[in-house]
Figure 1: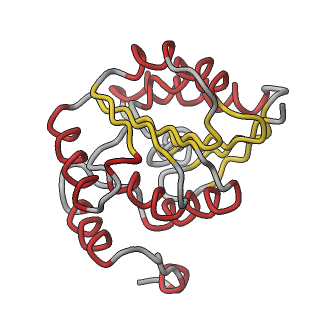
Figure 2: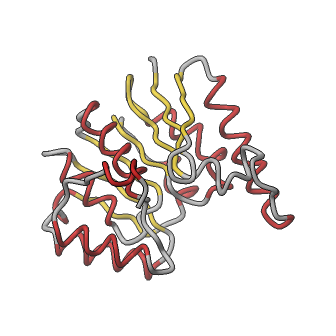
Length: 206
């Protein structure tokens, strides 16, 4: 363990930490500890009452967000049925199912129909779709709301620090389009950080 990692302590339920450790060994690894710590810090500062998550996976990040944000309600979208069912079980296990609206669907189909405003949006779905989701995400983001997009640098491919495999060039191009859009949008203030596989944090100015 390096020095910076040794300083990182997630104040989460022991059972949740155990499930996160197990998930890291599986085919659906959850957000790295440093990424989750940054996300929870954003949540702590914004104190959202309404959270939108694209990409539920096993629901462990959802549970962490709800643990951090007392009284918040979360809408989460997952297209994979197996992951969705595991997430539902985890919501029940941690007693947060009453605060979660879990949707088994493709986000591209769900987002245009969603209404209301969300103070925090966590984007961790299909990377090539980030740019396509953006108009609806911006519409749904509350003033001074935080849009946290995960995995935006993707193994160093997006930044050019690592050579992009031929089959991944389309995803990399779409992620670059997303970053270009959020970094130049006059209604957003965006910072891109090399945390985990990269995080883009955008705050809506109006």
